[in-house]
Length: 342
Length: 208
Image (cartoon, rainbow over all chains, first blue to last red; front, side, top):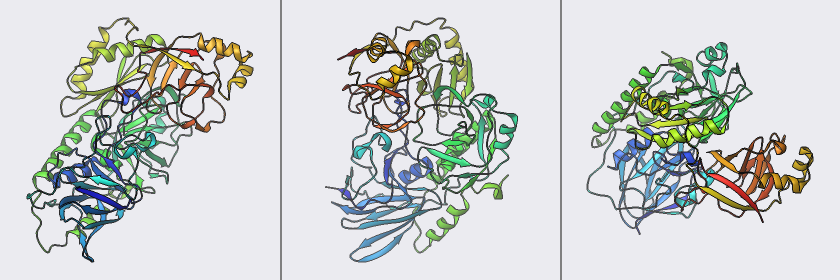
């Protein structure tokens, strides 16, 4: 059988796609890739539809043995990778596709520059969607593999062997943008003092240690409520910044609960959500107010840039050490607080 | 009614700011009226607000919010008889039943009579897949949440807090009072729909 055999699962490797749609009203979070741009580009590099299921690697990637035929994989994000074949190790660059033969071991190491990296496989994984999606939501065990992270011994069947399409590489590392994360006010900005609204966009916040796929607890100046912090629970979106009674904001990510009862001071715009999903615990971030028009323009601009990156994918040039380039850019492309504001 | 952006890909349609059957009925009526409106990805009904999630590749806030506002204003006082009715068999054997009775100045059998005598409406689902917030408990058995939430509430626990009653579909932390249990499966990812209860449904409990 054509498959990837999991020799070592990594720290938290999950199947993800662009999220589960249509079940939020039943309490099912969307889940899906923390960095949907990374997932889309990885898929594009192997010729998949952008929302095909791929592996999201966190902290430390897995080791996978190719079985049953040749497969083509692509990596995005800052992850150390190498291919073991007949006792010989070859370093594999992120930001491009690679052809692997049956028996090869793909060894993925530390994920750096952000919390996640992606591994897409040409043709996708041959696993059944759960509620219409390959996204994994571990808290309720929803998703393929029983909704859990990879475990040693798992066998991930693949849809088809590598085609003759050849390899692709991103022409340039994707530019996620920099500066403060852009936020729109509300929906409950009227629950906060004018001082809290000013603090949110002037202070520096740090991501707490217990950041996970549900959200980022932010450490920094307290945001004071002008009314009770509790509201009649209502629907949540990834990007919402909710503020419990202790005044410490929480930025919600893909695995957020579908409804919540804390007032939401602001919401990160859709164009900056992939950046929010790439901030490491301990990382600094700032916010900047924008209105609907600027948010819409940013959304369209991000889509244009993703389309341009896909259109500019090229055949790899032999001999060029792209690994060094990617490593350098992934570090500088991170949200870095006040230093590159503006 | 007011419409508040939730970022650039969703908005919340609010019907007041407090929990009531009338507000929730309007939420559900608007939800039904939005069926088939172009660009809407999905909706999340809650106590008194409807979250509308849209595809920015198809539509934008201004035109869609305009359409939704017109539909909302045309609804008037909506009928609430849209959902299904469920009778759920429960054992009133929860670890908090005696404490609830004592706090309400009732006996345990009286608490059971009051709880099982009510008809409840599912206002929303949330907290976890399949967790339905059902209202309203009769005032005589309303209590605030437990001061000390439990780290693990067993799946199938029948619970209550404030004016709400609910069944935990999964083992999870929880701060509600546990008054009973059921064998009914609240969430099954292989079923269609996967959740037993949906917003707008009504529920009565049958002691066994």
